[in-house]
Amino acid sequence: MGSIFKSSSLVGIGIIAGVAMSMQFSALASKNVGDGLPLDELRQLRDVYGLIKSDYVEPVEDKRLLTEAINGMVSSLDPHSAFLDKKAFRELREGTEGRFVGLGIEIVQTDEGYIRVTPLEDSPALRAGMLGGDVITRIDKVSIEGMAIDEAIKRMRGDPNTKVALTVVREGAPKPLEFVITRAEIVQKSVKARIVEPGYGWLRVVQFQAPTVDDVAAGLIALYRQDPGLKGLVLDLRDDPGGLLQGAIGVSAAFLPAGVKVVSTNGQVAESKRHYFGKPDDYSLTEDDALARLPAALKKVPLVVLVNSGSASASEIVAGALQDYKRAIIMGGRTFGKGSVQTVHPLSNETAVKLTTARYYTPLGRSIQAKGITPDIAVNERADGDGYNSLRTREADLEKHLSNDRGEESAKLSAEDAAEQARILAIERKLKPLEHGSATDFQLQQGLNHLKGLPVQRAKAIEAPALAAGTVAVPPK
Image 1 (tube, rainbow, N blue to C red):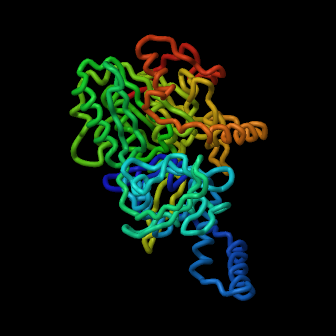
Image 2 (cartoon, rainbow, N blue to C red):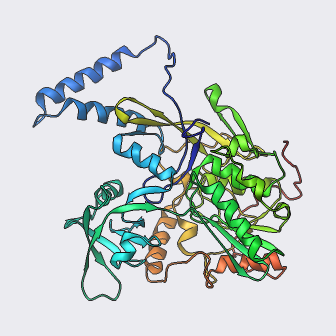
Image 3 (cartoon, one colour):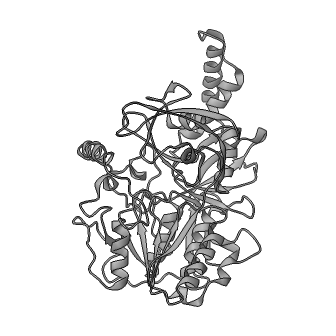
């Protein structure tokens, strides 16, 4: 599927700097698009360009007009195609490496147009005193109410060792707080692993990045060193926005029989029609095969995979493959539904175009696009209900989203659901944020219950199963 380093592809919804995407990096190649150029429309474009240059209230640079024309042309196709300027292209590449310069915060935009934050571990924001749940209202004294989230991100990012001032509202604080934070390079850890109780491990993939396969292998080896008699494992993909396709293939391959098909793609051009297997050539970005060092017992250890509406693309590839082969029980809520691939074509002047080029499919040929993965066991996020998770915006809710070519899409949010979403969000702002992997993590506890053969508290409203009852088909190698 294309390449950065050794042919890497990206699949994900970026929490900080992007929206659902599956990407590959490709060298720019000239393609014959035929001689039928729409001359009338090109003349119309020329005329509008001329009018702006001659009649607009103030002068406009040629570069700005042409860049915005390109941007509009590409972004009009679907929610994930885009023109990337120098900065956006650089940040995209940095994100795949798990490194970027900034404050080290995950962000969510509130209904009022402000930004609620969760500081990353050992980040400049955390060291400055920011806490999870803090709401940013101003950046360098400028109100961000109504500001596009991409613009807010741009203002918070910058060069290393430069400073940014944030005005923050904190629940319980009598007045807004001011933080001056020094930007630094952030190295985001993509994998967390620990023994949660004797015999049972928890492995969380935060995002699929270049080091993820190596980090997953290291985490699994560490778990087996701590507890060689591992009885069960919970693979946590909740709120994982995706990332490199190679990471998804490698994580799937760690648990599946050697060499089986993990995912396939299909699009207009020959390069987009591919099958990917659990082999080093398809998941390793280096000459070293990190999975070769894994204990053989891992292939048979009972496995539960936790997902929710924030699990997208690469996460859905893993969940879909493990579900198709009946290797794991998928538990939680229906996933985001991001099942398309974006190819990044570098252009001149260090810019690029990110263009949707294919859909991807599970080993049994299921299309995830605008549908997502339905869990085998639906479990709410909290003991008292699923809250905002069940009403989050998904791929099917995005304007101009790519259709599901198998004719199966999830329902869009109704007006009633949107109102309920706002009401529940207002309530959840007052609750302590969920901490994945903690002692109070309800879904994790239900996953452990399943592994132990204990009763699981299922969600009251269970969606239709992803596979028909009795389906035992196993995908071909």
